Length: 68
Image (cartoon, rainbow, N blue to C red; front, side, top):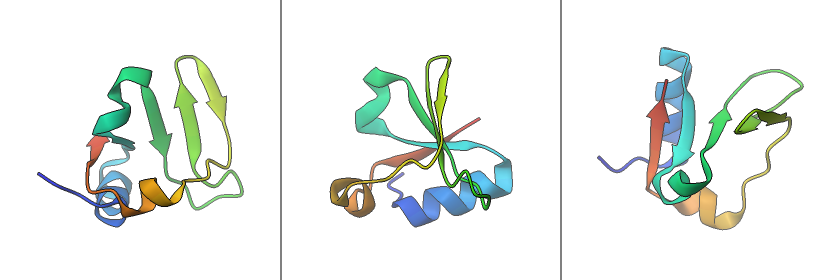
């Protein structure tokens, strides 16, 4: 199922999940969309970073998925 970032974010918010690009699977990267000052929280392994900033390729991609 192809999903753009908007569709994946809406689904993740409903399911209290994370989003990620299928093409980034190798990095183990997950993104937690929030409505807080932390913006979108990037999780890389045991590290957590606030205010993830997508690049244009991320915004236009259709390989987003939701993970729990």
